[in-house]
Image (cartoon, rainbow, N blue to C red; front, side):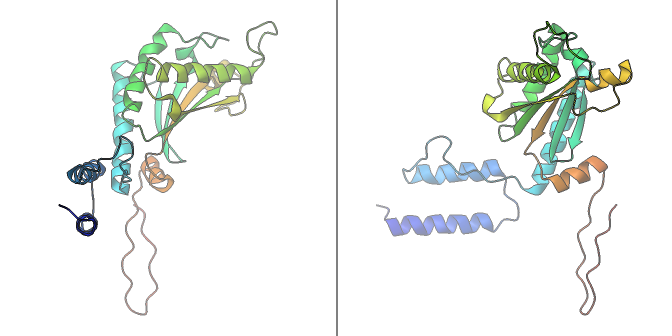
Length: 245
């Protein structure tokens, strides 16, 4: 018979052993926790086993791997020039989808050609249950027809963002709880709206995938820079600033 004090001692020894490693894989850690609980007849219900956060190195690799997979899938579809995959300065990945690929002019109904692109994106997002996803709609400054379905460009941009989110969470099976919708209207243009080329660039839907890596490491990834660790200063010397490659 296992007494309470024996159980506490074993659990303490277990956690000391886990902390002695410099890097622990989250999946292996959680599997070990579950095994210990089951061994003592105290298996936790699904979702209650504590999750170990990703190590910074694992976060970086996760972001790189996600961006690589997205680019590969867009290349297979022949959309690598139209669908842009970028590292976002706020600490995530931005997927920029041109409105011409997704919608007809003045509409928020998805074109049939857009469905395969969104399904490929959803397949990657399903692998990121810990991420937060913002879908943001953008338009140009062209006024909408007064008798149209949408009140203004903000209304149109909202419904376009919602259509993309609904496809990703519906047929794409990405949990809806991970999403947030934003309507920017014409307030965040990429280029001036004084030409058709500029207006076309501004009509877009952006999908931000966040929670993969902290903002500082994302800046290093997006600029191709790696920060060297600061060397130990000799006695009496001021610590030197880290070199930037």
